[in-house]
Length: 113
Image 1 (cartoon, rainbow, N blue to C red):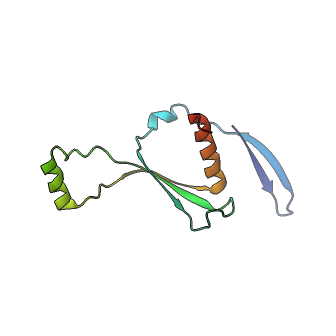
Image 2: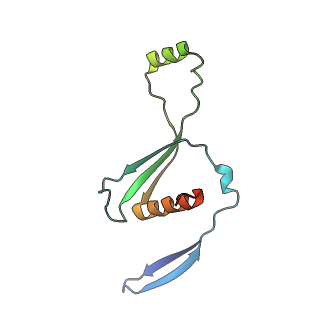
Image 3: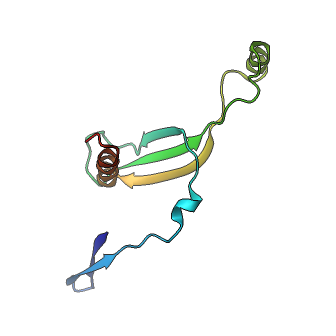
C-alpha cells in the first residue's frame, strides 16, 4: 500500500514524498477474539466534515460460566444485576474519511458492497 506525505518548510514550499507501508510479519499472531463493538461520535454532526472523527471500541464477552442452571442465573441476577461486563480489546479513533475507507474495505472483503 502506498501513502503520500506532503512536507512544507517555513517558506511554505511543499514537496510530496511517496512511501510504501509494511505490516510486520506475524501480525495476525497477536489477534484477539472480539464479539462486541461500539461506535461513538466525537461530538460532531453525523454528516460533518471528513476530518471529524469516530471512536471504534472493540471488546469481548465470554460465555457466562455461572449460567449452569436457571437457579444459578437467577442468583447471579439477584446479586449483580443483568449487566455483563465487556472485556476491552481495543479502542481506536479515526477520521470519518478513514472510517469510510474501513467500511468500504470490509464490504469488499465480505462481498457485500
